[in-house]
Length: 125
Image 1 (cartoon, rainbow, N blue to C red):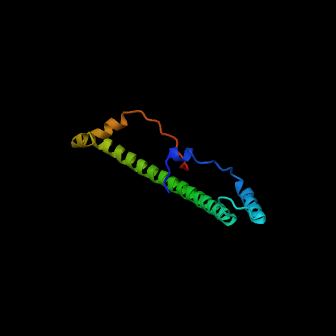
Image 2 (cartoon, rainbow, N blue to C red):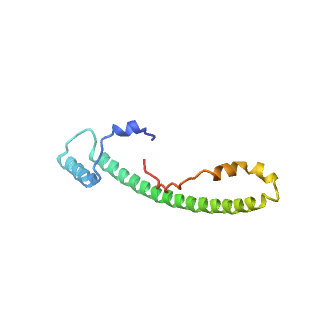
Image 3 (tube, rainbow, N blue to C red):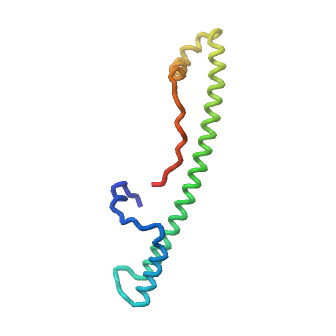
């Protein structure tokens, strides 16, 4: 089920610890035989499903964090390799002037002072 940010704003926000009270509520509904808009069993099923989804979300966040860290390592290795080759190209340019035109974009890129942005952890939506 896809929900937009606007849709999420209109949802009732359940407290993080509502599951136990919801189970007690279901037990009370069952014990009193009160008939409401949802049966005690349906309420228990919804709470259990919410807990399973929370576990899946936590596992997905851990997996996403591990993947992002692997990406950071790969990006670092690729960047260092490119810079190493760039130094070789720069050193070879005096003897091979044809390299200048092919690597003009790199000279432009390297002439701009950049700060490395801090890594961002994946966010849950």
